[in-house]
Length: 204
Image (tube, rainbow, N blue to C red; front, side):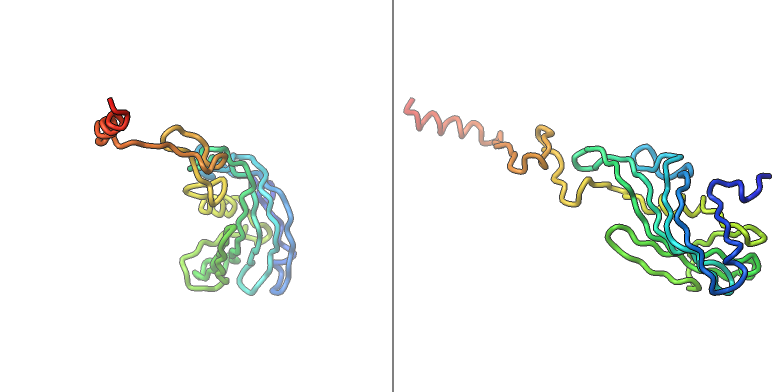
């Protein structure tokens, strides 16, 4: 079985797990795990995932507070333009020590996206996910955390911008490029009356 430290998502935390009140900054790039989204909206496996934050030790585990950023690949659901940008999520999650985890104690995690904020502190009695440390408490593996955090935050209906006007339903023209674009639609039920009116007005 591969040793934990050989995982590309492993972070050494032995120095902060020794006693409460310690802190360890993290500013690192990890490969995106598989399974984040799909071909419609997702983060390609192996893409650079940037994690910036810190591990802080408390009595029964470590709290990771971090910002996770990764390139998202999708298209706008209104105008169909490709969207390629960094997707950023803030997260606070708990890594309990093995003894605390065995006792059923857990913390919570919260995340905020580009527009809203959610704060969940460790120790809340919620069914929030936690992530295990290695049995000796020396390493935290971020693979599952990265996958869960990014996959759960991906937009169901991605937009190139919030006020995207989409495409013209008649001809498919991009309304963002021509907001005044329109078609004069005549109700066919009145087409014969319009023809009669035109004939009368012409005096024929």
